[in-house]
Length: 378
Image (cartoon, rainbow, N blue to C red; front, side, top):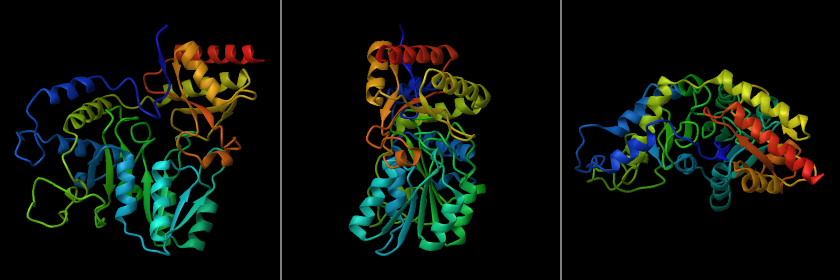
């Protein structure tokens, strides 16, 4: 039996065709060295920025700083805004720890007031709650995920951003779960900052990601160091993207990400077929007795469920050990969402996250395995 991989919301597998070869080729040739004296007849970082800008609906690619992951981008943004004691930040219970932990650090070390908004029963922000919180708190910053990594539900970022701007708040969006598998139009949505990763639905390698900073907004650099040029300055250069890109970049990973972006451009996300697989999976899991969290469309290719009498940990371990099916179980680094979902916040859920390469046969094998687990435990 071959392994079945259903943990794409953590890291995608398989990668886009050509990604591994591009990374290997970059490691086997002279490095470009990114402004550091290497052979620079081709600027891979500029090419990556250009493709990302097109995908995310951005007019100025140089407003994208490249780094190792979305966590890097979120930290650069959260710490770079330079919030002061007494200022408020509004976020939601659906956020990943890559948002919650940097914000907690701000509250502890800088006296920033952190407010976490509950979501509806599938993890989406309620507009009426958002409006009320904005009016009461007048936050300096709002941080919100575009798509939940637990339920797949997608927030209306354009509307949330418009409302936040009416109260003078900056908006930082976490795109880790959405860029590559759903429409993103950052300029149209008037988003101030957005962090993303390359190793999930962009189908690139780990160690790639970044941060978009809208024109006119300057961050206080959270990381400082070499940039290859402007070496005479005591501070980081004022221009993007150098202002937030300290140190030697992941050039081999960037070649891999570029290959993935090119492949995606030629092979658009198969939304209809993915939605059919999601519908099949949810219906079959419910038929055999699982409690499935069903978000309102649109949503990313994620299904979370529990089964009475079975811990998510037991299910996840049994699927792997006995059936060679890789899922994810537990809190998924988003610990605050589960009370909103009516799920045990100590146990979490079993999460199945599909990719564009997932098949009907794989979904059927998962359902058959789940039925055997349930029947054997009754």
